[in-house]
Image 1: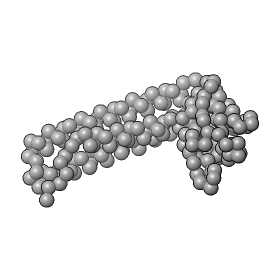
Image 2 (image 1 turned 90 degrees about the vertical axis):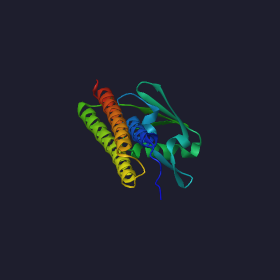
Image 3 (image 1 turned 135 degrees about the vertical axis):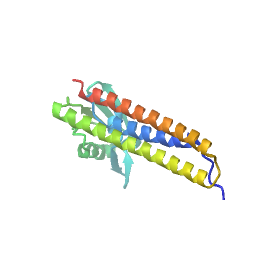
Image 4 (image 1 turned 30 degrees about the horizontal axis):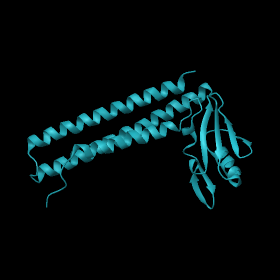
Length: 187
């Protein structure tokens, strides 16, 4: 029985997924500037379920050091406040009627170093994910060659394309982490 045809694009999509996941992780890292993305990982207990904060409120950053959260249902203001305080972000919202103002304190040098290290850790996870996709692709190629579905030449050509894609995505990850670390460390 013939296996799935080998498509480099399928593996590239998986590598792109690893890069996108990394960018999502980076959006949750504080850089000392207000960003609505900073609150996206927070979930709020409302109506008996856990909901992402952006499902119960509008988040905006009207100033460089302030995030504003406009809660849609007045009865959920307390739950949103509690969820933000309970997060590992170290933020203290100020309740103002149906909205919350969240001042973003400046980062200490020590906290900046911790965040830069965390960015590096996230990047390493993304590199491992890309390498795992590469490994899957190589195993697929070996199986197809062994089953005589592709020739040695075809295997070599596809192997080179997968390696090129792997190198490309690892470089994108390296560039992204370098940019994020610079953003975090700059005073």
